[in-house]
Image 1 (tube, rainbow, N blue to C red):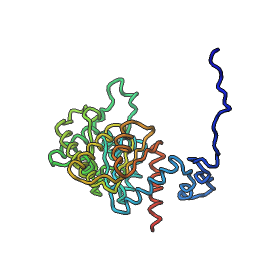
Image 2: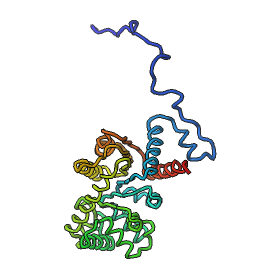
Image 3: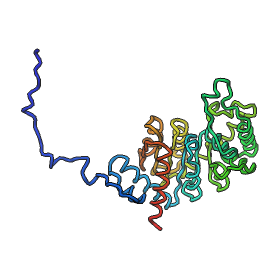
Image 4: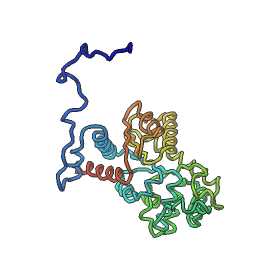
Length: 316
């Protein structure tokens, strides 16, 4: 062989003790003892990666709330399906969450919870015979609410919430939309036509869906125009709401609103292009800070809620 193994004797070295290192023992986590508090647990996290970012995000959210700034949650329907409505409702009732932005699937699962206390059919069991999405009450109630909202010139989120309340469904107390209507918290619904089961029902009106959802987009733009110093959390929407958020932000800035210092965070199972680009990175490039929190919603959102309430209690 013409090529010989490299002789390593000439390597230039330096002292470990004079080198900058990214990890020191000061950053290490601490063992958690039996019967420890949540605050002790948070303080025990290693000061690295998410162990650093998550407590910092909690502090930024607490600071925004104490300053009376908005905290808006954009969400996909999986958040509802894993049972997180009561936690979000609690934060709404405490005036911590000041607005919700949903995709179209959210109103379906939320309304079914309000009506029947259950939701989320097994698609594989019913798709073969064409029964998927054909629940009579779901289509009738939601399409009636949307058409009523169009006649009244209000948005889809408000229309559905008020309709659920008017029907006095047995589980309205577990509904985000009904609770938001009671509390007069804005809920905006951003629909992609054809993605939701109610669109296949004969009671669906494309005109009414479009009118009420566009009303909500404009309402969402007004919310984002006042986001300075606040926070926007994207939970479980990989494409639709990150795109809506970016358009609302550019419109707010185009119209002369100062929206260049706020907090964003994306909560999801994995890092994906649009949430990272449109929520975490691009919007905060000129100020503020964005975070990506990887993990299951049914674990991370309860941890966020509990940690935030604990952080806010420190001032009491």
